Image (cartoon, rainbow, N blue to C red; front, side):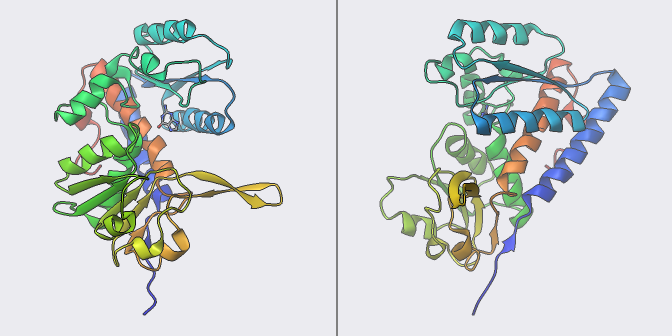
Amino acid sequence: MSRQARIIDGKAIAADLRATIKTATEKMARKHDIQPGLAVVLVGEDPASQVYVRNKGRQCAEAGMKSFTHRLPAETGEEQILELVENLNRAPAVDGILVQLPLPGHIDANRIIDAIDPDKDVDGLHVINAGRLISGREGLRPCTPVGCVMLARHALGDLQGLNAVIVGRSNLVGKPLAQLLLNENCTVTIAHSRTRHLNQVCHGADLLIAAVGVPELIKGSWVRPGACVIDVGINRVDAGGGKMRLIGDVEFDTAVKTAGFITPVPGGVGPMTIACLLLNTLRAACTHHDIALASYIDLTRI
Ligand code: GUN
């Protein structure tokens, strides 16, 4: 029997979340005369990063937030970036700080991230926020993993008791996502590109999340019938005729025949990441001004 998975429309779900955030931001402006502000630091001219940064600025404005973009030349020294981060830490109008990754090779990214005030670290990458997450305390969570959990909950509802397999172990996605899914009471496996019998490990998943950065590594035959597949991969491949095409870490055309639910690339996880960044900026503004986020947003919905 030929089946077809339901497509998880990340674009629509993210638009809905952004609308909720916008309503909360407007209410905050009316009630407290506060406008959340996000500072984005871009070092160098990486084309993909430039697109992301432009989108972040635009979506901030659309959500009623201020955005401050700092573009620095690729040869900027570490000390200069640290000085900028220190200034942003002290700036009253800045609630969130994001340093776009990857940074040029001569910069120690960890040193920069750890200079950010943890309560302004809207990427959730500071070692303090990683520690808060793992020890079950309040803190800012990384945006992409939060977006993945939202999409999975949208498709499946309660995630309790599910076998979740994450392929990928990065600090940005795989590792924090494992903790978030544990918090949802999933049984979590972290696999990666060196995992033996990766196909069999994937086949055990009710919820399969691919964040390994290898184009179409995961085949449809590895997907358990009816499973929910979330594809974090964004790989640019040559589409011929001088054009580039975006593909995920999952072979969509075969997986869509086996999975119960699947995210497309593009239009799945990507839009959720920026929406969750806006949510973190709102969250950071609430912390900064000692306001309860729950009075602006129904947190049980997200
Ligand atoms: N580059 C690609 N994804 C991200 C992200 O989520 N945060 C930052 N800071 N840089 C990125």
